[in-house]
Image (cartoon, rainbow, N blue to C red):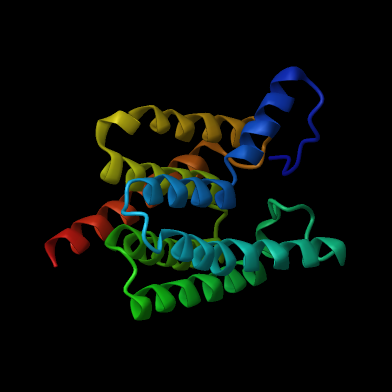
Length: 201
């Protein structure tokens, strides 16, 4: 499988933009903001700022550093063997967000977001050592589950983002169908488990 396709046709450009808009940082931010809109406004922006800096800003900043120094092929980190360091930095940022949320008494949906994202990142890291699972679809599926859990069926249209993102990754030859499906299953499974555990405790 060719690992990287530079968009040239209309459908490839469409896939390119869907892939970028549906990237893990963008989907995580979307899940964070949607969750925040359904919570009491007091202090909510503090939690958004903490998560954005730790779980999104730090990993994205590190990716930019690696790209500038030629240590990764692109911001998607298309090559599996280049993903270890970015994932370790991502894990560090997620651990920091999780600890700050716990110590600061963040609202339950935010704690679920942090815990599930951390667990998902650990599993993605372990899988990536041997196989290239789709982080795009795992994040999109996980955030879809979280949004549906807090917003209900009114947010059902967000579920269409998952197959769209999967299509874009396959179209650009960044992943196979199996890799995108595995990502979806991972995201759904991790976030559903986190929600069930949190609501039962």
